[in-house]
Image 1: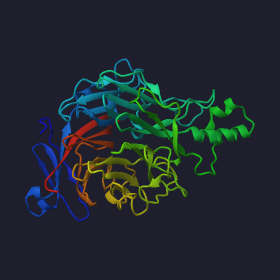
Image 2: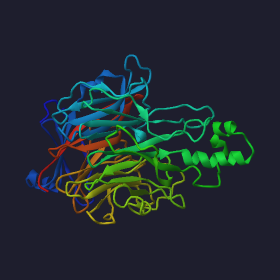
Image 3: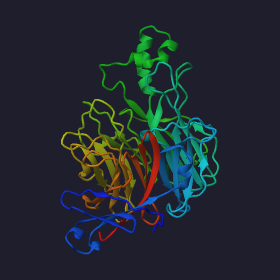
Image 4: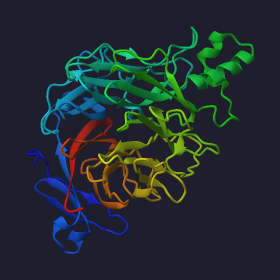
Length: 475
């Protein structure tokens, strides 16, 4: 038990048919299920136990945000990366990494990742992505490039790796293809996901603006304008009558040697993509890479899709909807899906939909070898549930934990729910002190416990918070 765990209040959110009771014990937050409500032994029902964690390295900065978590496959150590502002000698945001060998009870000495001070742009939906492979720790992030005349800033997709466990880092490099021609301002390359395939292949995929810019540039050229004038403000040539004119495309960079070198050209994966909803990547047990993102389908439907980017079956079919929510929304909700594989090979997915009558965060699972997901189960749902950003961690017993940054009454707090292997929420709990929390991230420790990280905002100051989650009681 974590000796620093603090006492805190909590709110349990019941599933429709199993109202949980409340309990705070030993300085831990505990959510228990139906058995305790009926006076049966507490061990007769599942319970969620939350232990707040403290990483002293986070306290050295004026602000921290955008955490990313991973497990070192060689040691089982927990790795935490985050953005920080207020470091001496840097006027912007920087990226840092720290390691814990005891599941988050204590942390080692942090190291700055980016060699160029201020190279990180904090952006929760486009936060850094951390991938740990055999002997290599990799980080992917984006910077911010202001472009005169453009409504939105451009960005480079940046990459660095460490061969000594995160103590020192290679100089950062860009992973997107060079611009199509000289004089074209930088484009947007962000909202990325990253994954390891097998033992040595790294894949990062992002929402890319090159095809959107090309469409608009062609219209400017057709009007007889010179390339320099057109390239400076491609937004001026947007087609307001085409609902897909502003769509992004999914592009990927691939390395077959754990980031030492990268394929000479990016791979185009898909078009007609919602331009501000992050890409999620996940390596499969067979060594392939799955990707999920929010597509922009005909009729302005904004549903998450899943696709094989690398490995058997890659490119053989179009991305397919995880579930046909049919959410019609004339804009980008800034909410991508979350994926995780369980030890049993079951693929778990969590996502948000604002579809009429179904507003909320949902979970579905896909058995090994199956093509379709199970019917979706509401995790946090209701007419007050605004756009949410879920995280997910599959457990050893076929169940899963789903984290969301919204409660059923619409408050912005972090809620963690336990979903059964058969489908259905067994119990859920609201994390104390998570008011204003957003974009929760989850990772499963080797011992089966889960670490959660999220960003809170209070008084205009952002802070990364951590907790360790375990599931007790009988299944």
